[in-house]
Image (cartoon, rainbow, N blue to C red; front, side, top):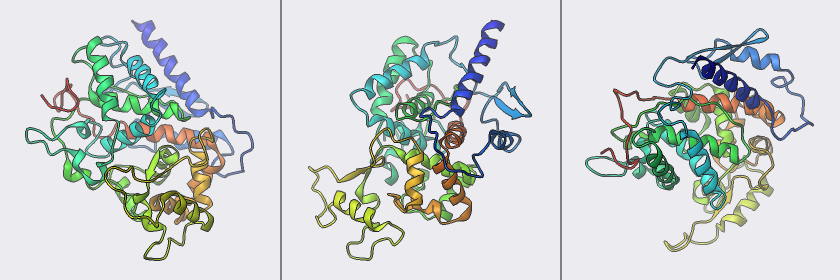
Length: 373
């Protein structure tokens, strides 16, 4: 048993090192005060976070390994359901092969779950038996991916009945989605329990595409996120599809267009969104634009930040990252250094995935992710 634990710790160290590497091997990077050497990254890790986002702390030329003693731990299902993470990974990959849109959907799902009272799968609860479902909150009306969680849960229930929580499935599936769209792998603890209630009113307060920078930072700060973590998390907007109504007010129409938009890009968005047409009928699918509008495979994160520097952010909230010196510095750093972005994104996703976790006395493992009973 001791040998297995030591072997697993070695594995965790290896995957964290992988997390630091740029899988796309970008070589021609612009110089940046944030990215020129790894010593800056090491010093940024030590003693500055309010909780252990990782079992590792970088100190002078060594890595210290920490054992997390709370309800979450690495390889939580090692004895009760050793195939759990493999089942999540293989199911997501299988579905992705025919439904590539599930990757950004699952990434959005984990944010909408964890940002509202923590990573407790409350976002999956349907309205029933007094539950005021978060699915009815305005920010969640177009939220998808719950059907994917259902499929994964069904597979797990066949193998390990009543063992793996819906909350753990969400964070694990989101990590797999990040990898599938070209992002980095990051270690995750497991052991979350599922909520018995939903939080409709709180879900209505999720960060919005129309939020300005002070409001964005205030909402994230209330969850314990620093400015660099906010900027890195929004790098997830590198993938997915955004419906035009989320940014149509930037395109003009009855008023002047957003002056922060590049003129050529403004015309591109107008052509994609058909702003001269009336709203689509219920039978029509609303116009949308791909977040990776330059095409897939252009580098998870980096292109997003480069677009912001060119005044080509699709969402108002995205472009707002360039209006203050503090956040703009991180946009510039991530635009020029993919390895730095991947490291910071790893750490931010690990932190997001541990927000408000419930233990066995506060929640349960729901047998059906849509219902409490």
